[in-house]
Image (cartoon, rainbow, N blue to C red):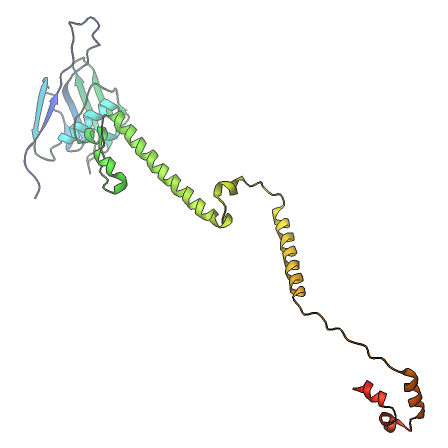
Length: 271
């Protein structure tokens, strides 16, 4: 069920005036009237001109009656950022956002499709958007961010600085992660050697060809070692022959079949 409880919006519209001080700053103007609101939120075509604001003005209404829309309109004219009005354009409406605000200095701030005719930085809106923009508190609960639970920054500049510091810290973590990954990728190239020593090694020209030459030398060395491990040949004793007796026997032999009988030396040679 929707909450129908009436809510309150208080506008304090008092300009700081210091007539008693000779060096007093220029007086700031005060918003005195909203002359027209069109195509913005629930204000399809509103002309509340007869209602003049006092020093303190109380706006009373239920949820969804346009109090937050008024806050966005005032913030928009204060900063000159038309997005606060554009994002509140009436859904399904046939009118473009349009607003006219009257100030006690006789000036009017008018909003059209081109934006505001002038900005009124003297307007300050204190609402949920102001808190989001100006208050920061750590909310992470993991061990690495417990310190953030106690951090608190107040003011737009402080919040901006805190967010920048958080962004820098996150980038530092990402950089550390990239360094760790790079060190792991290089680990196989400098086994047994510190990374700093490895990085200090001089660069070798024509490394590819030199590595190939070393591989060939290593292959030759392995082959040489294999040859050295082979058994050496056994020395053979050459028998002594009496060639005169051999030829004499061959001359006296009765034929090829009796050769081995007649010449025992032939039998020895044939074994």
